[in-house]
Figure 1 (cartoon, rainbow, N blue to C red):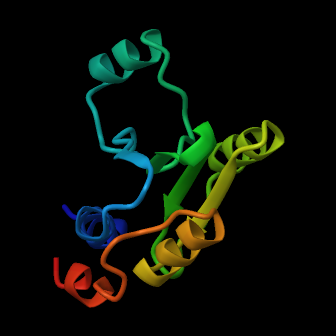
Figure 2: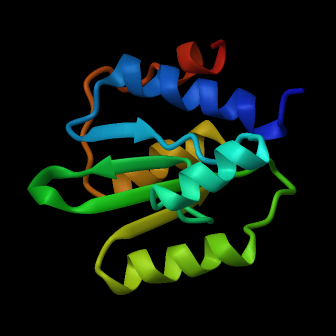
Length: 125
């Protein structure tokens, strides 16, 4: 079953592949349903609740993260706590509900891209 954020996640990944931002990035796949055994194993490995969907290392070693949400989606208490922690430590955090929101967040953090104007191509992903 597809979650509402899945389509946005695919669009964001496609967009980042197209525009090649001057940062390192990855999706953090901690939110999928897991068996109880797998969940317990991941917690023993150190997995923490509430971490955002996308993680970035920006130029100069700065840390940034994006939580992707459907238009009516809300952050959990765990997500709000992680956001506060990241921001208190000097990192950047954005809650994005669209590809345009992601583009705006990256721009506000000083990330440059090659291939601006390709947002429409990524939306088709």
